[in-house]
Length: 518
Image 1 (cartoon, rainbow, N blue to C red):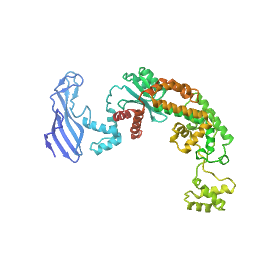
Image 2: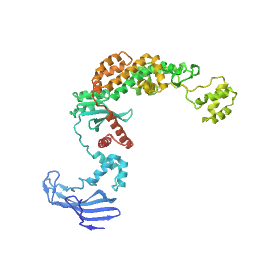
Image 3: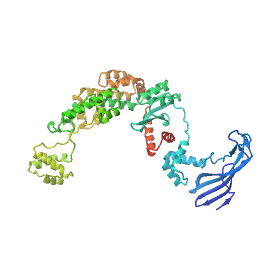
Image 4: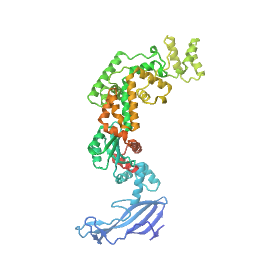
């Protein structure tokens, strides 16, 4: 359906439409430039000496779910001052030099790619009659410049894992505006220091207690106030207490086996202790791990050298010495039916099949083998297997010790009370950690010095030494309202964007999308 010289309100200035064709494939617009002369891009003077013409094709925004294609006749001019140089005139309002799509189409596809990424953005663009490949969408994203933000005054700095345990990056957020202002490669001191030196408007820096970030703030922004993040301080205090809990494993086992926390197994019914050979091997590996830790090797390297898990190495390092342990028996579906089974056994029902049939009538859903093994142990004269004795993990005990006792269940509160009686040093450490948490909540820095002096004489001395090395930032954390909470939220958004690209994104592409989302 050809239309000659149609009225096109969206036609760019300097372009005249000669023909418009509408068919099933889309809309095709034939046009030509109307400028009397062109301007050389090298020397600048205008020229009206036409050398030749050629056709340029542009894709444009769709119309009525149909693709729109421009075919524009463009002229080449001879430059009178560049010794025979030939240059082509630009097409105003449609596309840049060598472009195959209009400015407005490129903007729309770039915005789609910023939100969805490469392949998802390409699928949506095709659905909207703007066909494009996923690789082209990624090129458009990388080509988009970043919008400069206002000079920040309060920033939050934290790390994020590109690949956990292998490579990391640094995120910088404006805490006043609650938006990401930059991503930096790595989490070392140098990139953060250079960034802070390039932004002298920063007066307050909220960070975790990482040494490289503290050093970067001291050297890159020496006049800025450093604020240690309160959440990280509480986590560090909890980890210090957990290390103390690791050193009181014998007291924990004694309290657990005495039946305080719903644990009712007697000593003669526990599983046998590991053999001396097993304990000897574990002791040797523990001593090797402590020796390597003293030389400054990281946990991952220690675990690789001695052939142990990283959790075991961390447990030995926190305890500071070898701690033998007994493995508690696992739970069984038969545990809750033991009184009924014992009663039937005393009545003379020694058949495993008969016991299993009676148990099924009582709602037992376990297998016949569980009942058969129990009956076999009883025939051999072994005592009946009791309900499993579960020793709480050190992480759980640490949480109980730092929580409000009134918020715990009766069993948990009874366990912690008995443990504090059995281990007075652990009780003192837990009270000091709760007092430190109260200091952070009360916004009163005058109590920090007395607390440091009192806690230095307890098993928290290592934690106190670290606080004194960063005491200025810790005091600022008590007074200042700033924290890294908004930064952690931005890290979650960053991880969502990173995961949506299925691991194909490079740092430059991820940075573009994160800054656009901010």
